Length: 327
Image 1 (tube, rainbow, N blue to C red):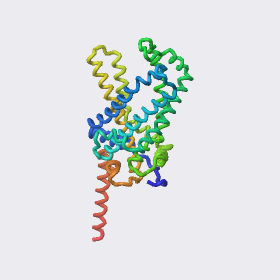
Image 2: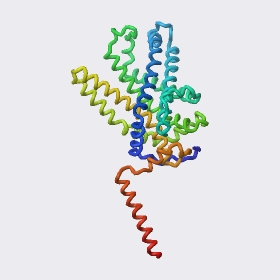
Image 3: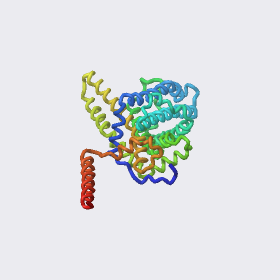
Image 4: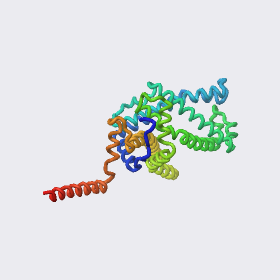
C-alpha cells in the first residue's frame, strides 16, 4: 500500500461479526489453546519475577525505583512479544493458513516485533504513570504506605481492593485509548515484512485516526457484549449459590467467557484490518484477504440472497425480451 491509498469506506459491522464468529469457531479448540498458551506463558514469566519484584518494593534486596522500573519494562517486553505472536496466530487463522500453536512464540524470531514490543511497553509505562497520578489525586496512594508485601496477614485487603480497582480501571482506559491508534502496526508488518517500523506505525494511525477508532471499538463491543453480560449474570447469581459444585461450575463458566472475550479481541484486529482493506479495494495479494473479500460480498442473509436472485432473474427476462424483439 502506498501512502495515498484511501480508507474512506467502513466495513459492515454485522458482516464482520459473521466472519469473526465463523473464524473463531472453525478451529475453536486450537484457538482457545493458543490464548491459554499465550497467557499461561505470561503467568509463568510473572511467577519467576514476582519474588524479586516484591523484594525490590520492600527494599529488602537493595533495589530502588530504577531497578523496579527496569524489571517491569523487561517483563512487559516479553508480554508484548507473546501478544504479537498471538496476533500473528489469529491473523493466519483469519487468512485460512491453519497456524500451529508454536506461532504464539514466533515474535521472538522477528527483530521488528522486538522494537514494536518496546514501543507498546513505553505506552504501557505511560499508562501506569497516568494511573498512578489518578491514584494520588484520589488519595489512595497513602493506603499503600502501610502494606507489607512479605506479611500477607497484615494487609488490609479491603483497602488493597479499592486501590487495585481504581488502578485497574484507570490503567485499562488509558492504555486502551493510547494504544488504539497503533492497533494495526503488527498486521501492517505481517502483511508487508519489508515495511519499516515507523512506516507501519504511520500506516496504522492513518487507517484508524480518527473515525475508524470508534468504528472498530463499536465492532469489538458488539462482538463481546453478550459474553460480558453472561459474566455479570454469573457473578450476581454466584452470590446466592451455596453449593460448592455449582459454584465451581460457575467459576469455570466465567473463566471460559473471559477466554472467549480475549479470543474475540485478538481475532477482531485482523478481521477488521483485512475487511477494511477489502472494502476499499486495497488487498495487494489476492491470496491474502481473499476469503474476507468473498464473505464481505456474499449475501448477508436469505432475504438478500432472494433479492439478488430476483434481480438476476429480472435481468435474464429483460435480455430474453430484447432478443425476442430483435427477432
